[in-house]
Image (cartoon, rainbow, N blue to C red):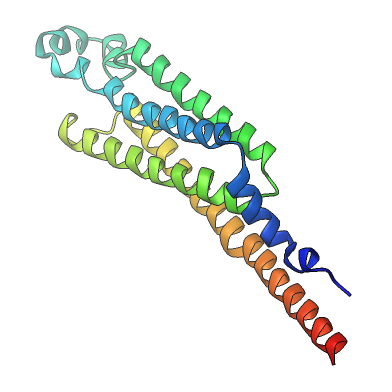
Length: 192
């Protein structure tokens, strides 16, 4: 006969309990990774706004192909480097956390995938607003690359959320109810 403790120890229950009892440092680290990633999203649009607004510089550079190429490339290399470092560090921390907790679907969805999706949407919105306000709708190479990176982040977050929340976790929950019903039926027949 199953003991009372065995009755509640399904894989789903272990995920819920583990998510709740996880050391707080991991949750803080996940939040920090999202803020770092968001900082990367918010800093990148600053790399494609300044040089093209200077009419004097634009007149001097547009005279030859090299000047035009300079005008259409990176506007603020140190700012771009900072944004890329933020983005890569945030992604690296999240990949490490994913590797650590890859079997806890609840934690992954709630602490990694959904917050990443929201931050990626914020980055996409910021990039789009910047393109149409500061750049007057001009899609430079940097603007296009930033937009593509934001779209890829949104898409990967949506896909991962779907896979883990609506596929993998759903199967674990169904397994949980099958085990609970099976144990309940065995307990009922044992008492009769």
